[in-house]
Each structure stands twice: as C-alpha cells, then as structure tokens.
Image (cartoon, rainbow, N blue to C red):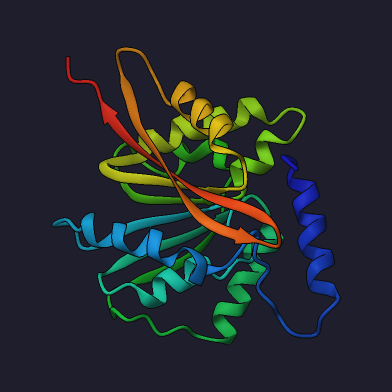
Amino acid sequence: MDKKAAWDRFYTESSSGSPTFKHFEWFFGFDSVRDFVMPLLQTNSHSDALLRVLDMGCGTSALGPSIYRHSLLPVQVTCADISPVAVRLMQEQAQAKAIQPHNPSSQLRFVELDCTQLLQHYGSSSVDLIIDKGTTDALLRSKEGKGKASLVLKQCLEVLRSSGSLLQFSDEDPDARLLWLETEAQQPGVMKADVGVQEVGELRGVCYYCYQVTPRLIVK
C-alpha cells in the first residue's frame, strides 16, 4: 500500500465501475471529523492572507473540498496524492461541479505529491494544518513503509508553523500510536512535539481516533 502503481490501479478500478463520479472515503467523511478540524482553523488565524491546509494522501475524498466550502476564514486547501489518477478525478469533479466557498478569498487546488517529499513543495513553517486520514496507517502496514512513515512525520513537523498541527485519523490503538508518535517526532536538540489523542467514535465495530501532533522548536 506504499506503492504508487497500487493506488493508480485502485482508483482506476474504483472509477471504472460507475458512470458518475463518487467520492471514496477511507474510514469516514467530513461530517465525522469537522469538529476536530474546523476549530483549529479558528485558533490558527494569523496575519497572512490565507490559512494553508494540506489534505495529505487525499485520494478521492471530499474532506479537502468540504473544508474549502465550510471555512469561515480564508483558506488555501491543497488536496495532494501520489496517484495522478486520483488527482485527475478530483480535478475533473471540481470543474464539473463547482464548489462555492463560504469565504470568497478561499482557494482549492489538487496536486500530485509524494508525501515523503513534502520539503520539495513547502518551505519550513509554512503550513497551518495537515490532515492525514489513513495515509500513515497505509504506510505503517506496508512491508517497507515504516521508514517512509517516520520520514513523512518529520517533514510534516518541519513544514508546519509553530501554531500549526498535524491531525492523524487512525484506527490504531493509542497504546501503539502514541508511543510511535512521541518517539519518531523527537529530534534531539532541534525539535520536540506535543502529542494528544481524542476518540472520534465507532464505525462498523471499529473505534477510530484523532491524534494531534504540534511541533515545538527547541530554542537554544
């Protein structure tokens, strides 16, 4: 599940069975997580014109477009995925069915992006909120994905503003995920991170969690 070709095949097959586009949601959709996401945009308001939001590993989820639609504050929402097939499907849907944002200054874009290469696309301390709904789960459960998951986490913390947060939505138990996050987020002498967890709820007998990671630069 950490291979680009696998995701291209998945989204090609998913879209070929229906004459009309349909968003595919891992775990759950926007309504299940809006109370975790939207308040962070309010608290992260700053003097820059736009709050920068990254939906990392978006697939064909409606999460990013829904944030763009509902945010009261001006946002630039980037829906990014390693699969060009997913990105193309999302672009075509946005063109066919234009979404009207609550704030007229808001922006929505779709980009092909390998989440292990965030620093090639974003500067340090430039993003306000990163949302990871199942992306890290897919990496951690792949044979060669654990190193990639660690790299992604470290790059997320580097591109986030000091007031920003990474939200990971996962079905992994806190006993395992909290330990992994607390261990992998530390860069001795450079950065540490605050890590917290809230229960999202149960769906089809599976309990889901929201892990919030906030970078803290070490001032020497």
